[in-house]
Image (cartoon, rainbow, N blue to C red; front, side):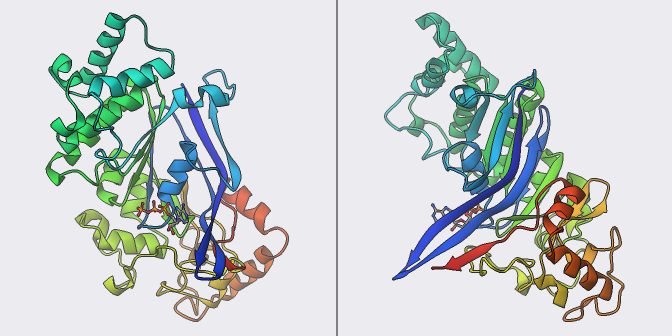
Length: 375
Ligand SMILES: Nc1ncnc2c1ncn2[C@@H]1O[C@H](COP(=O)(O)OP(=O)(O)OP(=O)(O)O)[C@@H](O)[C@H]1O
């Protein structure tokens, strides 16, 4: 089965405002691995860079730096020509992703042909019907002859899922696959994805704002904030025991009572605001949440790396510089203070070993730079 490895992915966009040009770092040193039968959720508020990661994996955007490698079962990298056979995307908008002029059959025959899976007409038709049955669109022969506008949003999203499976994909990137659907049918579509994943041993990247479904449907959660992964770990650990103040804010704001209980960590609803493309000077390598963080310390302006906060659980936060439990109780750990130990680490990390230390500690994102540089 295919495994997908994302390493040190960076995406910069050029943006123009009047006569001023600037560069926005939408994705900043993001790394993770998708494995057969497992789901990784990418969560974070609007503008945190989730879709840009997805679009780079789907080869709809070219990374500024970093690499994405799909590996076939024997360990050989999947070449460019076959990449799309292995890696497919389900988009957020089931209305925009299907062509209103074509039948459902047409939408499914196309990828079958493109990826060399279509045979004689009757054989292809049988494959189309099989795909429709797998996503519970029956009677399949009848659905195949309909056009997208004759289907509901949920049915269209099922067609989009069938289309992703048509080339025999083993890695599915689902970018907010249910956020545009009626609340009452969202769970049905997510359960369908989960069943197909079990049946085909799919590796899934699930992109969402919704912590409750991220927890329920994924094994691992990566929390993104302004382009960086600020926390990562097993789904339950991240949602029930969030360690980064930003994740604590998200969990406290989530409707899930388990996740919300006692996790506000001093954050208030007032701190919940869209991050969007707010400018942080690119030269500023410090924590990019510090302007919103109620636990900000002096040290937070220095480069921050992943710190272990539990088994396979990491937070990119100076509060945890001392390991699980961290220097939270240290004098000055609250606003404006800055614990002495963390300051020392900062000075060390700001030096030449910073990148090395980050890579070693987490094997993941280094202390990259985020935001916007003026030109
Ligand atoms: N083509 C582009 N040109 C310039 N900036 C872009 C472009 N695409 C995305 N961005 C910016 O990159 C940042 C990340 O956007 P992205 O869509 O990846 O975030 P997101 O977390 O997926 O948000 P949402 O949940 O709203 O889709 C945002 O600030 C966005 O404005």
